[in-house]
Image 1 (spheres, rainbow, N blue to C red):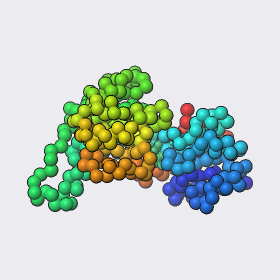
Image 2: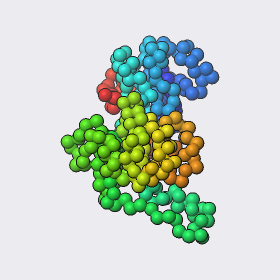
Image 3: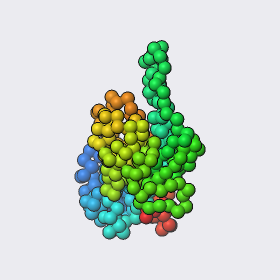
Image 4: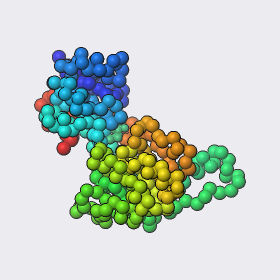
Length: 313
Ligand code: 8YV
């Protein structure tokens, strides 16, 4: 008999079909009464397919599923999963690192470019025929400027390599200095923000980094500084950011992530000094295909008694 997977969100159609050749899949988002479905299926569900913006894998959900063996996350950030509750029950957790690193780093660089060179503003400027009345205000040179990376993990390093290729100076902040990295380390985030022209947030989300980038950090970035966030909305204090942007205490912000997606603070929608994206770091056909494949391979490996491909921790 096929094992039952509780899916919180769909994979791409091909991967979803492939998943269904190996497992019985319950699409939770399609259920009229998701809670009732979970109760009815509680003994059957042995795996969860989860993702950052769907039903959370909370302690109570984990407790409600006595036969749960594995949680396979579609994504690299796992802050939607109660990892401690899973560990306490010895439930395996897998995720999809590496395959999305390049695409996510590309989005960070796109936001740096968009802000520095007024790309989105320029496009609008042409479309609404403002060009006829004079030139777009000047942008900012990237070469020679300093990018301060918050979180020099896999994605942070890929961003650093890309921005270094634009002749930018790279510095970083994180929990600890990385001996194998050539960039200057700042133990203090506010100090790094003072030294940076672009503050690029690429650390993990969750309680540990909640509101890490606050008023003081943004103020230190200064009126010529730009903020880019491709990590999690929770890392930046959104209220502080709104005040700072309103007062033009920084030059601008490029955001792919928000505190309560898909909600974007109303005030941001009319600001000229922001570039807003709908969380598209990993959103390419190639990467989402690879992420889906990795989810399937991890699930299969678990139930076939093989080592997991990408276990979390
Ligand atoms: C999402 C992400 O997982 O990997 C992450 O942590 O935030 C994204 O890649 C993706 O959008 C799927 O929902």
